[in-house]
Length: 309
Image (tube, rainbow, N blue to C red; front, side, top):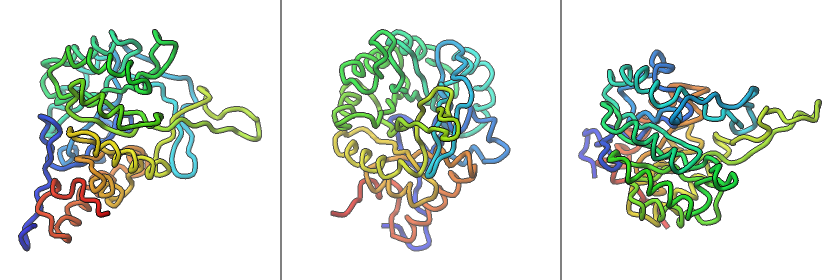
């Protein structure tokens, strides 16, 4: 228990990554850092997870790419990015100015692409870890997502593990019947942690035109609407593995973040809320610290998995 009038220790570890607090910003919602630098004190964050990076530049999907819905957003950005080389040369010099771990979200369309993009970041100063986006369609397997077939997932995680010494964090898909199976596959393949959840498949129709709102027709639902789903899956996954779990999905205030930690997450990621209120992550950090102090917890680590039956 925390001593009276002492501040709780907010630090946590994700593999070899030491975070000053358990709050990071989720990939795809915070750009590459400079976009939010005038709005958020980047050094106050636990970690920055940058927008997904592929081996070569990628244009993403045609517009419109995003639509607001009750309880969140449906988006189909299509993983637009400048490619690994340009990200390293143009964005890493900026990110290295801040005392905050940088985790790069990576993706590919084949197992070989995943492994090759991972090698691009080996030895790059300032990069603390890799988050593996396994929700991409595998073009050699008829479009099946890497993260929805345990055998395919095992191949890609193992391939990347062999090619990098950086902490590896597969980002699990919620679109599976048994999340514990996929969590265990990640652990068996040498992952240092897992993050979840990714977006839920969704679609919005304009009733006036009777056409899909998104140019891509379907997209991914994020925001408060998916939060209870995310809590349930984080709770299940954390009970199945010994490696740390990073929870995300619908965090808009300290309470949602605390739910994830109590359910078993070591750290959390603020996502969609960054679009509506860039200060959300900082408010969540302050709220977690206040909760720990008020409830007698000496550290954020002491709250992990403390769900009462």
